[in-house]
Length: 356
Image (cartoon, rainbow, N blue to C red; front, side, top):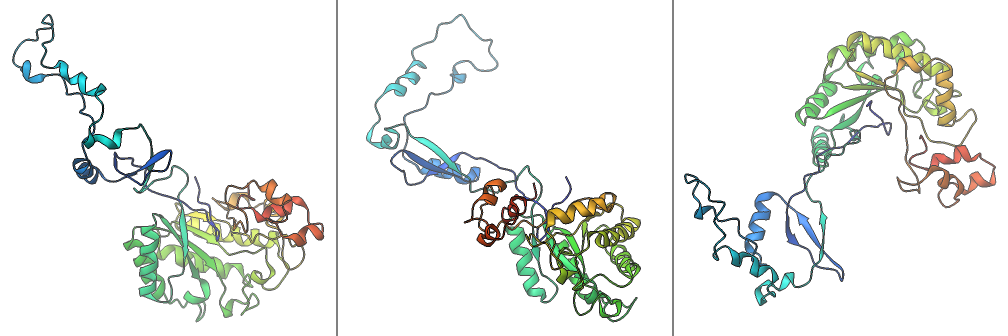
């Protein structure tokens, strides 16, 4: 499926669940014992060192009938293999006391797990210090994530003037990401001074073609290495839109220009719409994301993104909480929203799953 973003992303997790044989029992509770999974070699070593359990049934006696002799099915079994059944019912000895009472073995998975759901990733900030970037990428990799989202700020790369690019940090960041075998979402935005847009505030450039030209250069340089591009960040907030009232129609025009520029260079790259700020405020300062998304569709945005970006922080509710329940519960939603009559459909914003 397409990438979901948080801090806009959706994006996605990771190792296949690999159950092994229980190698060692954890401390028992009054009703059960906990067994930990380890790799097969460790399990074999642990099993060899444990006290013996009741003697298992031996396998049928292959030595009594070598493979080069014809089978003799008519011969009744001798008394030699029969004792194999006797220890099963025998009472446990002192050495086999751990098996004196049947217990439920509840496995605790300590091995890497791969989810069958979409991939997961992490937002990273790698531009400024190479050693910190290396540390953070290692943490992401060790955690089992397969994606990172990194901002490629327009003003940091083409800040000196139109067509004047400084790729030094971007090249280093891409090399480090590649070295860890991670996929990357490039979040693009943050116009330079020469592009206008209310600089130094973050806002859409005066000329959208300038933004398209930047994206053409970025996609050309990293074609096949940047896996996805996310266009801008939280444009439903005035502070991310040049301190002007948020406009889904204006953002849709930006999204269209960006989509066409990227796809012309790298058709395989994904284009993700901006992650929107979860908010119940509905005025010239902020627009609720659910309203803004509908207005994007109304403005014709549907053909110009491969994945819908969303921010879903969850606030005081756990990830599995029902959005409807969260919207009705003052302890999970902002109490002020109840006092000021904020509609229940907007109070869902306080749930991780509010975008459902």
